[in-house]
Length: 188
Image 1 (cartoon, rainbow, N blue to C red):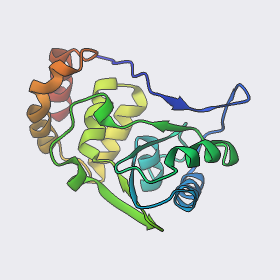
Image 2: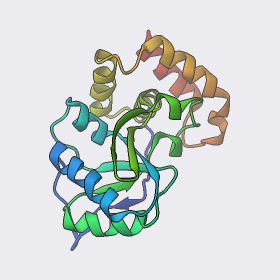
Image 3: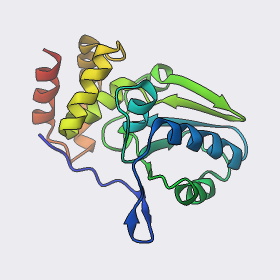
Image 4: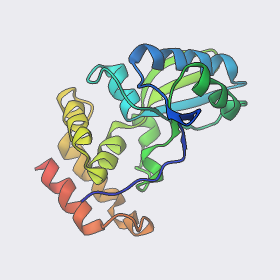
């Protein structure tokens, strides 16, 4: 099963896509975002940004972020940084595409604090389920890397999936039966 995700994107510059993003550029983005934001906030990185920072990818197309709580000037800072750093920034996280996993905040892995901003990897179990739902070839590689690094345990992934399964009805883009089969196939 493949689910098409339409993500609000901030990724075009003069009609051209920005260049791919490296670990160094992602870290620069994190520092610069904290410099330009005002007040406390938490920024959750997901997808390719997590893969870069943890070393199983060298490049990604964009940096997916979720702010919760959102620091002041967050959107203004993103608008400035996408151009000055030549970086694709998307406001995207697994909870936009799937029911929120219970305990996702507590399972989100701390990365670092810069000024008043704390950065975390969005819960890897939620990331894995979103990637299973989408099922791109790169997504499967990412999920395997998460498992190999001990970030996701298949048995726990299955338990968490079953906890959100009744709420899938709220996400009509997902065929719940096919998605459930995909999760079970991956976990077994």
